[in-house]
Length: 209
Image (cartoon, rainbow, N blue to C red):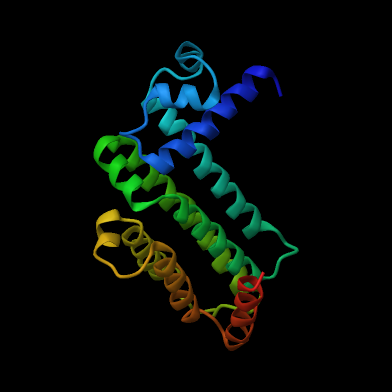
């Protein structure tokens, strides 16, 4: 990795942490440059604006999350119950980093990014959950006649509502609690008897690590 690549990645990492902890509106380019120990001139050498930096840093995180989910789903050495647990954990980890205050901020002040995140999330989740369901069917964990299309419509709409900052503010539950409930309740209805016997075991094993 060259010095320029290392500096760019460092800027992305530090700025993302600032955005997620303090919000897009409150963070300035001076804050970002100061946290890295570079001048604003150096910052603008890599990114033309705070908006570009926000989009680049958040999408790097989302792409990394998408790659982790895809690698887990397509790893043939992992059986379906474990895939399901791992995918759930990756999604929960990412959602936990996106606090309602941050989501509310970018929805109001970075509308274009909010819309791109929604499209990216739905496309990645839809493709990977579809693959996961097909794998589950092939391994005997999901019922053969289970309707994947209806499941995806309901599942994606529930996830959308869960990370909506307005919905969260009206709920007594955290995004993590709601998402865990969605994964459990939605997939329990899809599982065969074999799947229902294995899924609680895998959940317990993962939760006690």
